[in-house]
Image 1 (cartoon, rainbow, N blue to C red):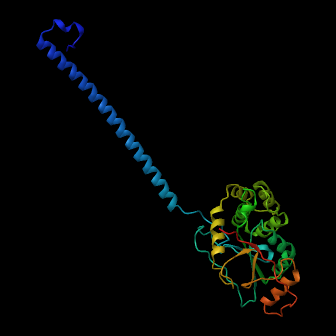
Image 2: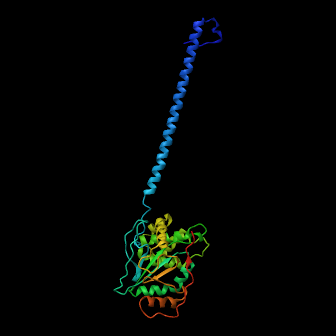
Image 3: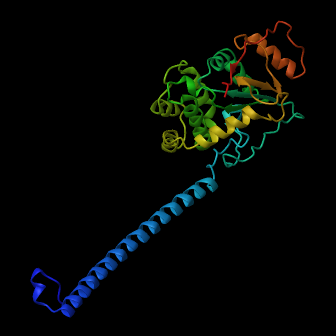
Length: 306
């Protein structure tokens, strides 16, 4: 093969024509090679991009169909039922978004049933516990009373970004799951050491420390559960169920604030800082004479507007 060069003036006209054809052929071959490389790179890029898109779509699909995670054991009703000796009623774990199974009250046996919906950052809940906690504990110890506690979270906005309400509710779910018979002691410790609104709340380490003070079993599992927020999905789902309703076996449609206290299905409307008022309401709910001295309640901590 020969190319046309400045010295090609000695070539004949046919040779020059042939040389030009050769040069054009070489240029065409080079261009074809470039085109093939470009096409290969373009196809590879399209394939890679397509695979990436497929991977993203697959991830979205998997995440959308993946269960939101199991709820805690012993809280199938979205709360944990405690009876004499702080013994918890054992129930299986349900999926976070699964319909809860309400506990039933043994009316024939005259069992008094108290249900409490609480946010562990709610100061009015704290006032109710300070005023009535000892009395409620004494009712349980008579063997004729069950107390069902529903931790919900409506005050995350008041913990400087730490979402203390959610973390505390998750911590109680952890104890319910791994050490249910220590739940009531842990619940009481959280209110005895309740942080103020507009603070960061208790740290995870402090929650773990109070779980230790409550002598929880499987302490390492409880600690890991608190740190990992194992039941965060359940906390969010159970809170939504409480706020949206219905509330089974009660005279209310939904929870509108905390504390919401039900005695034999009837909502307590008395003062949270008046022990006599609550005692009178308990007597009323059990069919005894009602104490006319009971007073109206201050509005409970409201559910924040969406």
